[in-house]
Amino acid sequence: MERLNHLNERGYAKMVDVTEKDESIREAVAKGSVYMSKETIRAIIEGKIKKGDVLSVAQVGGIMGAKSTSDIIPMCHNINIYGADMDFKIDKANCKIDITAAVKTYGVTGVEMEALTAVSVAALTIYDMCKDIDKEMIISDIHLVKKTGGKSGDFHFTNILRNTTCS
Image (tube, rainbow, N blue to C red; front, top):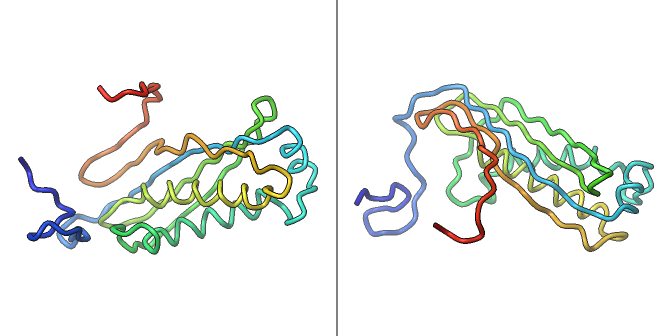
């Protein structure tokens, strides 16, 4: 069995040494959703949330989350982020806001965790901004959509629904 690279000789967690890896352009895109009531969606659209412009604040929050990933995820490397962008789609028919984060760097390690963190922080920001009128919001479906660059190559989410059981 191959030894796990996140464990040291004594079996304790360690940060992987990436000094020998080749630099390349690395990009990642992640998505997620926040489900909410019709009234909450309407209040966001009409700009009636007391804390301010929900999507503008979530935009900044998501980018800040991407930049802070190594501070909150124990084994993530502190990397230079060369680009980060957020997109929000209000889906009135399904009472949700879909969030997309795209993160880019040039370096020796990927930005998947940064993209996932950006979506998560943006979703939590939406929740925080709207919780006074809707505590039943559901943050859901956070996942990596694609990643490019690096030794492991490209990844594209296949969107195959998974069973609730492991097989």
